[in-house]
Length: 225
Image (cartoon, one colour):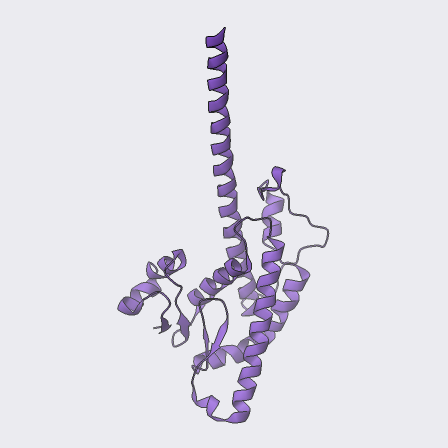
């Protein structure tokens, strides 16, 4: 009888451990999928800002993310949920509209070397001929301030909408958008490469990293070849 009880206990323990491991792996897999969808969403949103597309799907106010038990952020991954991730909130759309309006100005200043993309998802001012004129310098600084203010608000909104994901934070959203912008940068524009993390490895192993060669260093400011 004791042997049987002991055997049942051992079997039950092994099943419990297996269940925990499977649940952990399942949750991690869904977190990875969530992050990838946010990356895809970033691409879609920036396509809209850069006027490559004219539509940006907006989530209805009554749409609810389908979350799981135990408040773990584990999602029942369904087509409806995937579709929800591809959309943005009305506030995010409003911010994207303002960014879309100033896109050409910012691109022109990037091409002139006056503005550059840092590895935190924001613009930085760089020395250029246009800054020698006080009035023009003030105009560029106002544009920079307005853009970075909207970017900060956008990242905060995206992070808030996805707060059920354990690894999600404003800094995570910033890094996702920073990497996307670095990959979109045009020849002659200046960007700051990611620090020594997974994002840097993605750049280093990409065609851009091969073009940069020896100057492909974590955190370095480089001009896109």
